[in-house]
Image 1: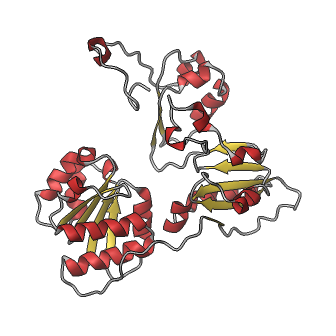
Image 2: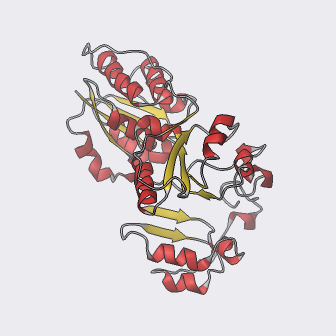
Image 3: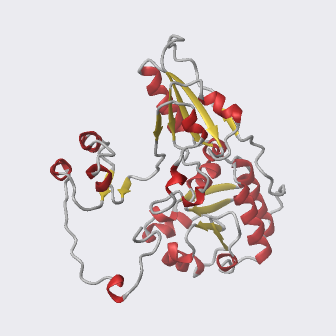
Length: 333
């Protein structure tokens, strides 16, 4: 039996890949699919689960194509709280969709394995047997085993901090790759995972304090108003809190799974001297050939323009603000 999982959460996809049960998953991120590829992806599968961030409009045409077919379709939100509107699109009973959401909300390979069996039994009537969704038994933080690279004890140590969700789903290849490069450079990598840097536990801070440098893909914003940690929000929301108290250099890394990176309004940090233009240009020129980078903003430095393959200037034709519309969070700021 083969089921299809289409999720905008790469953690879901990693968990499905690691799931090892009698009912198998085929999986893909719908935002990276061409609609012409969808029939071939569905071929040979008996049921489709779609999990979306952004509501139906995030993948409207794809949903229309699936719902017009004959396979049972379970439609769910990528948020932790259920979305009745999305679940209402499902072609299975509401109770089945709600339980499917619970498996995915808890996450992890074990829950994905049981979700496949649950859907196989309750919708396709196979009789595999299944367990109820269960919270993943993971502590707030921990260490990833990494072989000793042979560096001397006085070599610089580099903490590589990443999200617990990646650890639970087995998505740690990017961590081990970075640690191997630290080994080659003569350093001592300390790979550590955690659920969050908000309300950081003293034991985690002590572990990070063993390092000379910290590279983190976990958001290093931990101020008093973390929900406002965004452009235009409270400046104190960008305070790294207890992490800053360690007095270690902290590099905020990006853990990305796409070949297209959009650095919105990134010309301004270069203009204001917050980031080094030469370093940006060197990074862009030396990036892997399959990566595409789009940088937006005014007053691009000449060095960036010279290095770019395509440079455009936008001219306003009309704008909602001309009619009195105020700026909107997430759009204008």
